[in-house]
Length: 525
Image 1 (cartoon, one colour):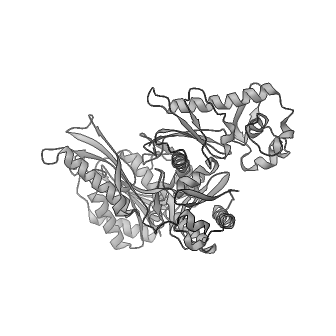
Image 2 (image 1 turned 90 degrees about the vertical axis):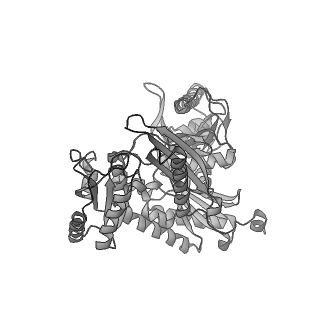
Image 3 (image 1 turned 60 degrees about the vertical axis):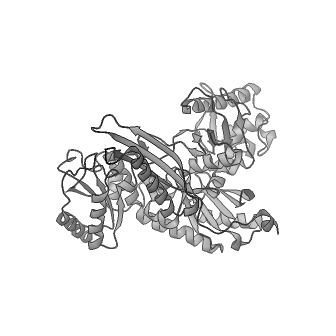
């Protein structure tokens, strides 16, 4: 049996699953202290299902802790940034494009050192160990415990980053080290930014993982803990301590993976409607399509893997404005829906009120919205359907229309037909698809690197190396070695670089290394 939990801005959802069967599901309000909300969700889930705690083999959690920390600039560790590049890149030092509020939050210690490689692996300058030893002494003097190391073209040749990490750890064994080739893609500034974000969250990652582990112990669950990644896969607790940045945007990806599982569709669009926002993404082969360009997170440009998602401020708590024209959202009452919406005796006209008045939802007291104009209700529902239809159309990359799966607690806002959409699916358990996506997640590993194809290293050699690295990363993240398989390979020849350069992206996934799941017959017994 598996427990899946997804912590959103409005609700915390939890499900208990036995293999592919949903045994129990609950939805609770997200608390200011997110961890206590997880404890409440677990206790209610166990009480509802009556399941034995010893039957649970794994707990998967999708959390907003780390995203919230960066967006608010709170609980970020003071971080050192070491760039191996001199004499190149001096014109644009590390963090040159960061917002001032985040610069103040991490109070960085910045160091430019010799090193780096060209795109084909040729060295720019040799590494100088004495520089790094001086940096270690400075970090010790200022009590800085976390460092981000970046090197020019380290996705091509990671040797210098690894050597620099070894030198720093030899001087300061307690240091938390984040290396850019393990986090970001080709593109120095964006990859470096992603690495610094990861580094400044390392202390918080220890706190959060320990807190979640304590939450499991508090309710008597001894199963291993996993957290959701932003590519639709999972990572174990120890991996999360090293790479907290990989949890960013795990909420939308959980919903998309859960939608694919519930509707049994591998290629489609997913519309996830919550209390405040609507997220639209595309599934390709059952996994979220990844963004190919830069991703802005809290004002920081990064290039690590993130789902390609469009979001608008439309949800169950969205306020409805009728003057000077009809408009719904982006302002929302959010988790205070039950206090302010008309159907709950409040004074605010919300999107949920329109859905109830249209007979699309049975929430609250329908008699409290009978006075609404039929024209307003009809036009409001059409307005919401039109906005979502436009988002789905924007996500298409071919002329072929995409079928749509509608999930989330706010899915009642959508009619059974959307403009320009061939089919709309609203599967059972759609309200907790995000938690189901977490519970059914697999372990993944990916590679995104530049390779130089030469007479000594052919295209087949390059692809074999990339496949092997992706499989090894999946296994190191907690996958069962016997189940890992490569699910996606993409290669693009890079014409703007000299020589025969090719960018190779490979994704491998496998099942969790956990015990056998309980059968539904055992659960019932």
